[in-house]
Image 1 (tube, rainbow, N blue to C red):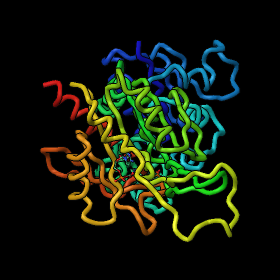
Image 2: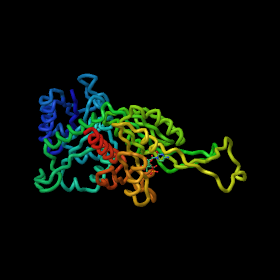
Image 3: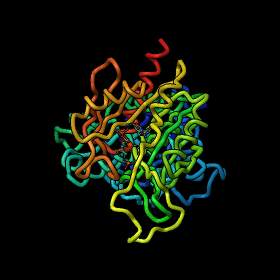
Image 4: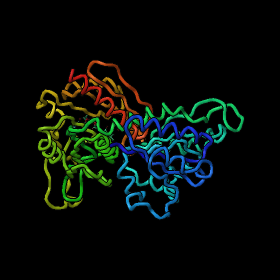
Length: 398
Ligand code: PMT
C-alpha cells in the first residue's frame, strides 16, 4: 500500500489539511501526519490521528510508539512527502537545511518526491526572501502547488491562500505515478568530459562538469528505471542506485557504452566527448623542449553515431548538442547524422551550459516543433528531458 507523509504546519489553511488527508486516502494511500509544534497548537494531533488511523507525529524526541516511526525510517517508507499547508517558516527551514524538528529532519532524509503547498499572508509570500527560498527549493527538485488569490485570514485579499485540497491531491498522485513511469526500463546515461592524453601529465578535454548527466541519471532512477551511468572524470558523487562506470577517454567511453547497449531501452548522451585526440600518445612526460610546435590530432569515435547505426526497434536515442550559434539548426543536422530520436540543444560558451547549475534547453524531435525550456536548474532540466523522452516512447509504441 502506498504510504504518504503529510506535513502540516501552522497556517490558517490548516483546516484544509484534513481534506488533503482524505483525498489521499480515497486514492488508496495510507497517510502518516507529521505536525510542527505550532500546528499542534492550532489543531489537536488527535484529529489527524483519528482521521488517518496513525498517531500524528509532532516531537522529534517523543517516546516512539514503535521504533519504526523515526524520521529516517519514515523517509524510506513513504512514496511522497506532501507539506500542506506550508508556512514561510518551514519553507525557509527546508531551503536553508535547518533540521530542528521531525518535519524538517524528514525533509532532509526524504528520497521520495516532495510536494509543498505554501499558505501565508500575501506580503510574506511575495517577500524576496520567501521567493528566493521557493526558487532554491524548486532548483533542488521540490515541486509546488502554487497558492491561490483570494480572501486571506488576515482580512487581506491577495495571493497566499492554500490551493484547493483536490488540486494538491491530484498533483501528489501524479508525482507518485511518475516514480514508476520507467519501471522495467534500462537507461544508459553518459556524463562529463573525456580526456585524451598527450602524455601522462597533459591532455585534451573540455569544461564539462558532469552535472547535467548526473542529474539525468538521478531522474531516470527517480522514475524507477535501471540506470547505467558512464562517466568521464568529474568531482561528483555518483547517484546511489546507478551502476556507474568511470572512464577517461572517448575510446573507453565507447567500450563501456557498447557493453551496456544491448537490452538498453533509452540512451541519453549528455557527455561532452572530446572530438579529437593526439595521434601520438607518449608514455613518459615530454620535456618542454621536446614538444614539437605542431602536434598531430585525429578524430575520436563518434559514440552516438555508432549507437545510432546499431539502433534496434524500440530503442530511443537522445543526444545533447552543445552549440554557440544556429542552435536548433545545428542540432537538427546532428540528430539526422547520428540517427537520434531526440536532440537536446544547449547554448554554450560565455559562462553557459558547461559547469553551471542551470541550463537553457531546446528539445527537438524529428517532426515536432522546438520546445524551449527557458533558463532552469539542471535538476528541473532533467525532468523536462525525461517528460519528453516518455512522450517519445509513447509515440514509438503507437
Ligand atoms: O557537464 P556539464 O558541466 O553539466 O555541462 C553539460 C553539457 C554542456 C556538457 C551538456 O549539456 C551537453 O551539451 N553535452 C553534449 C556536449 C557535446 O559533446 O555536444 P556535441 O554537439 O559535440 O555532440 C553531439 C552529441 O554527440 C552529444 O550527445 C555527444 O555526447 C555525442 N558525441 C560527440 C562526439 C563524439 N565523439 N561522440 C559522441 O557520442
